[in-house]
Length: 115
Length: 117
Image 1 (cartoon, rainbow over the protein chains, first blue to last red):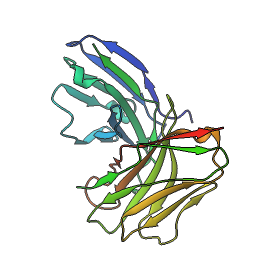
Image 2: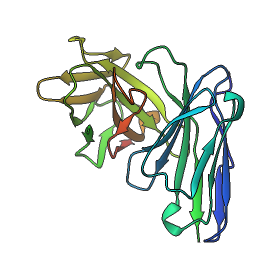
Image 3: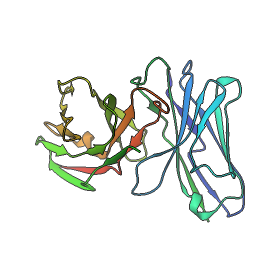
Image 4: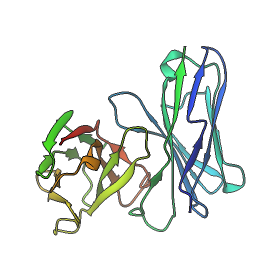
């Protein structure tokens, strides 16, 4: 078990460009989450997948953001037409669904800097 | 909506001493989970300790223990015999047990813990 893997770990992009982050959850975890963390703040929920179905999207996830989880395995988070306000760390997490107390495991995060 | 408040942006402790990190939360639910997560610099966030609201007994994990006061909606973390490796950002988090969005964690802003040798 290699844990939750995210890449790239760091991305610097120019405003207006598109970026994509990838998350590989712990194998056999059917739940996958994306959170966003800015400096001085705790992580904020963005979206949730159960298998391949995206079941909730936060209002923080504007229409420039899209997340997918094809075949219920890895997930991608794409940000189109990036803005400086998108600069943050994007955290992926996964868990096994049986009850809500199950531990959620986090990846190391992907830092995005928009210049 | 649930909220989690950590009123101490930074704390410091001497190695081998004890430190307590504070957390308060607001919810109308009677059943929920509370967590403390540790986020070392540039490393992944890991779960330190978990408390189920229906349990009156405070959770303990080795040097880490909590003081859960349900009526006061308070959930503090005590770290005993502090070690240099305990230095990190600590987040308090809430998760409802039942109903919609019971998979979602709500985090506080965090407390940065420094351990002095």
